[in-house]
Amino acid sequence: MNIHLRRFCCTATFVIIISSAMIVTGGPAAGAGFQKAQPAPRPYMGWSSWSSMRRHVTAAKIEAQARVMAARLKKYGYTYINIDSGWSNGYYPDGKNHPNSFDKYGRPMPNHYEFPHGIKAVAAYAHSLGLKLGIYMSPGLKIPVWKANCRILGTPYRVRQIADPKRWGSTFPHHVPIQGAYRGSYAINYNKPGAQAYIQSEADLFASWGVDFIKMDWVAVRGGKHPVDNRADIQHWAMALKKTGRPIWLELSAGQNIKYAKFWTTYANGCRLDSDIEAYGTPYLTSWQHVLLRFREAPPWAKYAGPGYWNDLDSLEVGNGNRDGLTPTERQTAMTLWCISCSPIYLGANLRHLTAGDYKMVTNRAVLAIDQAGRVATPISQASPQQVWRVKNADGSYTVALFNLANLPARITVQWRKVGFTGSATVRDLWRHRDLGTSTRGFSTVLAPHASRLLRVTPKT
View 1: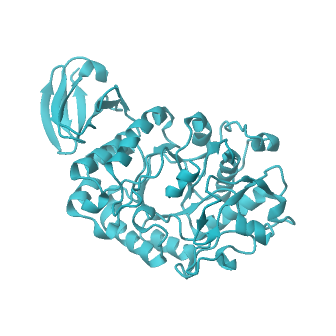
View 2 (view 1 turned 135 degrees about the vertical axis):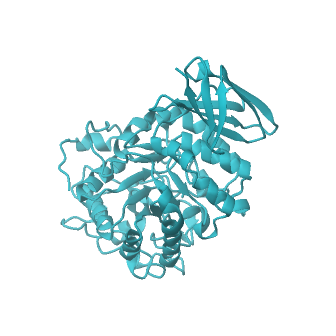
View 3 (view 1 turned 120 degrees about the vertical axis):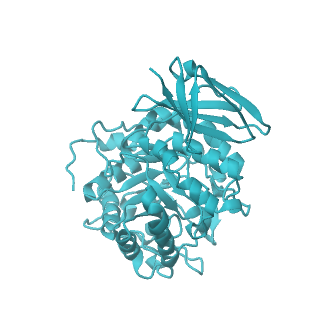
């Protein structure tokens, strides 16, 4: 989640020593040799609540999605059930910040109306089905916690002693009221004693609940009237998660500046590259224009992806047929891009209403294998809407994707020498599970508007 309000602002021992001054002053260097809490050897697969539920999440709804995933999708690799915004943050029926939106130590608590037995019970249920559970967070010290001046667990300090109220703690639009209240966060000064202890107390709490994944939203480095720099937050969260001893995936959101890619990739397992995929203000999950943006954002980030870190194109809005907001052709093109980019594959659709056609699409093993192989494709050229993306595989074959991003049919021709080899090659269509024979110099096809082909090309040597 990063709703349309974005537009108002755009058990381990550590062997690294980090200068507090370096962390706070906006120039922290990526920690050499730092090992993340979750090794993330391949992109994760699962489901996220935001697209289909927004903040209307409940334990019963999440567990219902988990049952569908366990019964129908787990065998294809889908395992994460991620609860986005709405599980906490004080969103109660009367729209007020209740005292029990956080505990006496200033740590977030579940909405007890919707999660009466807590997040721990939901995590236990997901684990009983062989799944993993994720939750949503944002950096900084929440303003209601600052107002309450809670004591930091295990220390004599209080949260106001670690806060910097002159700086925002995230890019969340503090000046925009949500349900009648102003919600946001102040920056944390990590030079202050008790700062890391506060982050550790939150990380330990989530680990005790059995959380397997944290989406950290509203993260950025930016200047302007309200400058934000969340690098220190992410560094300290990564260290705290590592110290819990539990493998917890840390995912950042959203629309990061590639200038800081090396830092994010050091401490996080994934990073959203663009604004939200959702088509807000419409009855649909997304639109073609939102998918189209990803073709522009993915290539510059490709070199940073690999075991430990994966570029995130946002939730894949395939599963609910016409409700997706995409034609069947566009859905296949979207999934093709996600897979050749080795993005995490997490569905935004309501799993209880999977259509037969979409279910067949999101369970295509040959296509999913491209994503899970972790070899990121890049375009030969983006000078026109007719594009060819390719990458060499471990067995010497090539994955080749052809896209027609235009609004009219077009022929696309690719020469093998531009893919990376010469001579003839056998060609297999991965979506159709069909061998297309041998081609001597290249491949050519006519594609409908917004259509794609996904091929495995094996040179004959």
